Image (cartoon, rainbow, N blue to C red; front, side, top):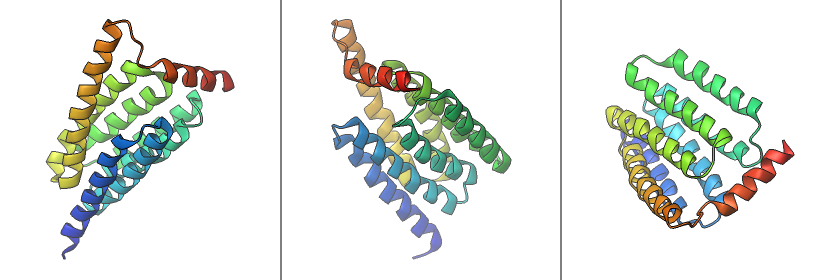
Length: 184
């Protein structure tokens, strides 16, 4: 097996970890598995020679775990600055800016928004990752991000329909966010 195919197989492992996270009913376990997925796909990108995407994904992994505990604005700023410094310093092609920008926007969304707004921003962020992964030729990365795009898109439509019927699908999440905001 050549190094290229080994790197692609790491991306397929990330795909399996990423796609199975949707089976979690617990938001906490979902985010923990999202963090694991991000770490694995980050290694895949580094192996594929896509340093900006690799660093962005590894920062996503750490950021997701930390966002389970806090929504502190200063922590958000640290992750945004790290993403910009590490990602932009290694970019050699304009397409490599897509995952960096996607990570910055999704970091802001995880720390400052909630509910349908967060999901819509994450959907737009996923569009950037899909374009990057197709450009890179990442099989696992393209499959998983394409799956995220479709699944999150369907969930956004479903949640919006619930809201239009007067049902708040984010009621439990709002209470958790409010508690985190009170704690600082």
